[in-house]
Length: 107
Image (tube, rainbow, N blue to C red):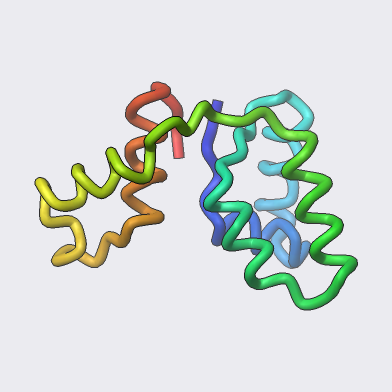
């Protein structure tokens, strides 16, 4: 299973890089791509029109999800303890790291 970062989803939706299209298509078809709410929240935040919003929500609905529980709180604690903001790692990226670590998944 793999957690896909927002930037990779954006490239996939742009359909400009055949390598990313092929890789993501394989992950999706094989049930290996996992969705996280905050990643899809970022995608929805950047939607340019209703068609993009609909497409993003269709993927959100169809993909397997990670049990997020209190991931944002735990990521905040991890971020504080490791001083991640001083290294340019924000809360969303901390959540991604924690979700990967907690679920033994790749990013």
